[in-house]
Image 1: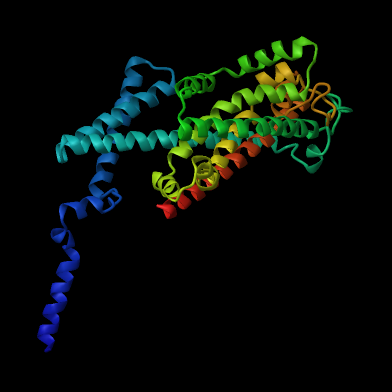
Image 2 (image 1 turned 180 degrees about the vertical axis):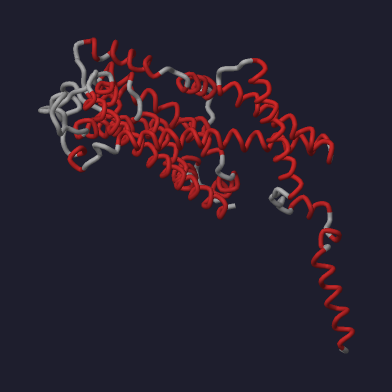
Length: 375
């Protein structure tokens, strides 16, 4: 092959690579993943022009209408910015593209706003609570600590929270998973009624759960205890774990069930040996989400466990502290040192919840990878 023929072949190969889309069928085009769009130079110019024009208009309106609040000016600037950006993109392209880009701007801006608010809250809480965050704060309680003395910590609250949430989790996990299996795998006659009850409980106010346990247990001669607080937390955790478990079981491919049943396995063995092991990571994620919800509740624990300055290792006898109660009780006192302890306790609680949600995300990603391999 001569050098000219070789160059012609290279040109043909280059053309085929660059224009491969021309030779794909319709089905192949639908199967191809969509490429991520990026902002080009013209989009940046439109954003800049809309920002400047909206800012100028908002300032003129503030001076003309004598607005005193900065928030109203920012809101009007944002609305004008979205409208002007839509007009600029529509004049350059089409209405469909303009709507798509305007909605994209709204979604990204709101997401950035929410992330910024959450970040500001964490930074503010860290700045307020880092003052007293020492190892001794985690290993001492408030039994011999006065409002004006140094020392004291969240030992009693941490122990109480772990015992109460642990007892609630031990009760909720088997009941919730079995309920989810009944709703998704068995699908018996009571499934609609049970699903209605679970959905209704998911919207139950937390203080109502505390009132129910208070009336049925605490006020019935048994007194305040950590076990009563665990019962109230279990009422809140049960619908969350049940609904999450049911959704996870729905993601299991039916091909796994059909293959197991085709081999002659009974349904209970299919659920026990195939469905539940495949959904293990997702079910654990639902449990962690339920724990994260329960660990920060104050109202139900206030009506059932009451709280205590001393460390109570026995959740079945006497009042018991918890982290939300620790924060709520100390932040209400008109004393700066007690308020500092409350901020530090809130920081410990937030870090605990963040750790639980991070663990839930890792387990969910692991479950999705496992499901992808099984398919």
